[in-house]
Amino acid sequence: MTLQVGDKITFDRTFTIEDVELFTKISDDEGVHHLTPDEQGRLVVQGLLTATLPTKIGGNHNVMARHMDFEFLRPVLTEDTIRCEAQIEKYEKQEKNRTAIIASFICTNQKGKEVLKGGFSGVIL
Image (tube, rainbow, N blue to C red):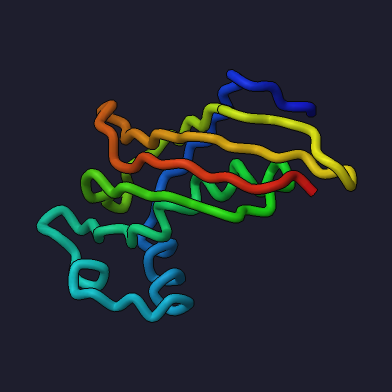
């Protein structure tokens, strides 16, 4: 699929306790808030695990990121469903069969609250 400036791409994911446990093992991010359930049995999802949503969108389009910017706005808990919507800001052919890309994104939870926003830039391989 060829992207164009203005295109919007979305991806949804519901985070689980298993996701947080696996990411804890991989990242060694063992903050007590990631290990201790709240009164409803939920864990706080690591920020960088939440940030895998826009990287998934980039990965689906073979983006080799050169810059990524994240602003974490509120906690994400296990059982939350997060929707990430990325918008293409720049999509420009370059030499050597590369395409430059810049995108912004906003991630919202199931209540419509923004949890993460930012952007990425790079090249399409």
